[in-house]
Image (cartoon, rainbow, N blue to C red; front, side, top):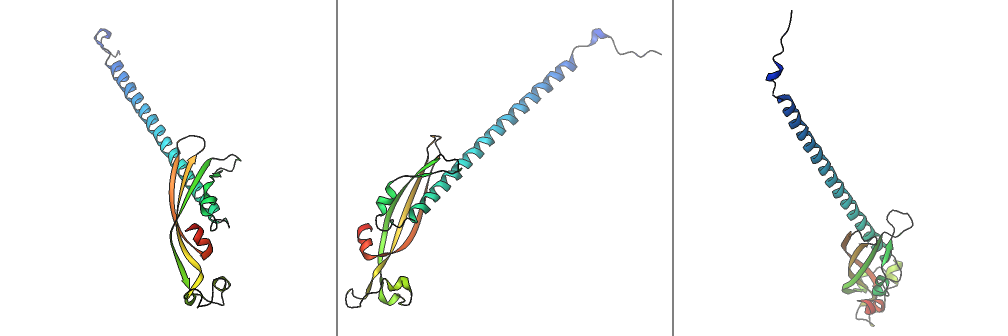
Amino acid sequence: MRIAFGNPTHQRGATLLVGLIMLVLLTMLAVSALTSSTLQMRVIGNSQGRQESIAAANSALQKTLSSPEFMLHPTAVAAAPVLVDVNQDGVSDYSVTIVPSCTSSIPYLNSQLDVANVQDFKCFVSQELFDGKSLCAQTSWELEARSRDVNQSGINSTIYEGITIRAALEDVKNSC
């Protein structure tokens, strides 16, 4: 018994055409997937850089605020850029500039102080000398920290922080 497959002269290459169309579609799908994954990697890299920049700015703020000289000379302490090594490889990754500005200074009243507290006792003064005001004030500060990548990758961020600090009135006169 013989099976007939048709006359080879009647084949017109339809299978070849369908195969080529499928290959083109698969190539377009692969290129689209590659482009999408490359774009996603860029987005993730930029997001990581942004988070590092914010972490560097926060680290510089903590370092500046923990300086005992900050209340005495806030602009001088904040004037020098703070270099931050985020990945702990020994090379500075970010340079952070901090701009402090005092927004208010309100003297404490002696009646608000607890003489038994050592911190309050330092502020307490005779009622007659200062109209009931103490030697300390509550100061409010706004700090702007600008973080810049030292590797020139273009990653920058700016964060703002507000704080209140108890300070001696004589220190407040110089800074607020």
